[in-house]
Image (tube, rainbow, N blue to C red):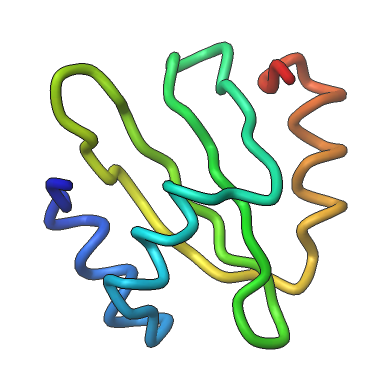
Length: 87
């Protein structure tokens, strides 16, 4: 896996470890396609919150951004309503 500098910055800001990101990508509880960007969005419970990992998967997996949230349902609902997510 390759981590963009943006992803590394977000991981540091949110206190997210690399193994948490890797586990989320390999074994997501939910996986969506961002219709606008073509990126994949993996979601997995991470402590008391959910970890959201946005990545591209071609020959290599490139982690674009990472964040944790307690409002995962609201985020998913908004993106579905806006036509951004494919299941």
